[in-house]
Image 1 (cartoon, rainbow, N blue to C red):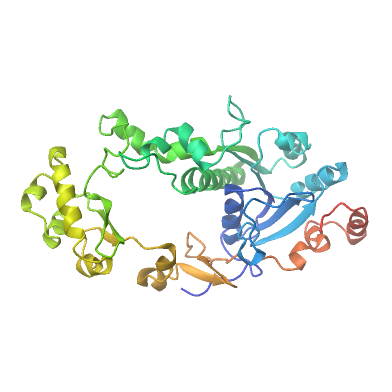
Image 2: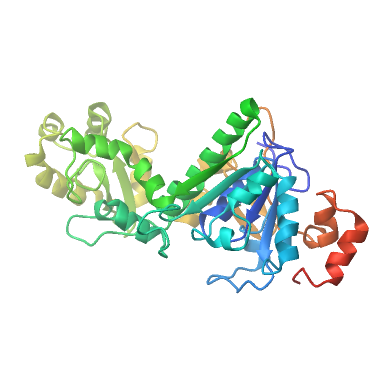
Length: 391
C-alpha cells in the first residue's frame, strides 16, 4: 500500500462533500477526522473564547484539528451566528456534540439551519439523546456505559467493572453511529433532495453494539452476572493468561476445532477437549491452562501457536502493535510528521485514502476559509476588522 495522499490533496469517496464541525471533545472530532480522510472538506468552527481542553495536545499530535480548515468565530455575536448560517447554506453536513439546547440558544438549531438550507444533514451527538430525563446531564464514556448496563458486564467476576478506555460509548456508540446516520441520510438525500436531523446518543449506540448479547440473554444463553459467560472471561478458552516473562497471551478458541488444535499444541488432556462446554470442567481446565502457559515466555508461545488456527495471540502493547509484521505489511500505521498513528480506515478500492495532517497557516485564515464559501473579499475584510474572529 502506498502512503495515502495528505489532506491538501483530497481524494476519496466523499470528495466534494462539505462538512461543518462544531468544535468539541470526544467522538464528534473523531467523526470529523474520518469524514475528512474519506475525502470530505471539513471546516471546524471553534469558539473565539473557547477554553483550552482538559488534555491539550501540541498541534502536531492533535488529531481533533488535523485534516480541517479552522475558523475561530465569536458565536455570542449576532453577526457571528448569521455568518455560520450562511456557511451552513453552502454545506452538505453539520455535526455538533453540545448538550441539548445549546445550538438553539445560539440561534443555530436545526430548525433555522434547515430552513436556510433544506438539503443540510444536521448531525447531533450527545450522551443521552436530545430528550429524556437525563438528556441535559453531563457524562463521559463510563457514565453512558453504566446507564446502558454494559459497564456491569465488562470485567472479571471477582473484580469491579473495568472501564474499556473510552472506546465503546464515545467512539463506537458515538462517532461510528453518527457517521452511519450521516451517510444513510446522505443516501436518502440523493433520492429526495431533502436533508434531516440525526439524533445520535452514545448510550443508545453502545446498547446497539451489545444487541447480540441481549439476544443471548433473551434465549437463556447469557448470564447477567459479570465473568460467567463465553466472552467476558468466564470461559477458560476465551481469556488472557500470564506467561513466564510476566507478559500475556490471549486465547480465543471458542469453536471445537480450534480448541482441539489449541489442546494438541499446549498440550491439554483430551478429556478437556471432550468436555469443552461442560462448565463443571472449567475451573480445573483454567488452572491447567494457566499453569502450562506460565512455563514459556509470551514470544515462545507465539512460536508454538503462531502458524496455527488455535486462536492464540500475543497481547501486544500499543507501541509493539505498530511494528508487528502483519500491521507493517498492511501499513496499518502511518507517520504524519512527528505523529505515528493508525492509517485511515476503512480502505476503498476506487479511491486512495487521504491522510489528515495538521492545519497550515492558510487553513486558519478567515480570508482563505470564507472565500471557499463564496464570500467576497471586501466583506471578508470588513468582518475581520470587526473583531469577529479569534486568533
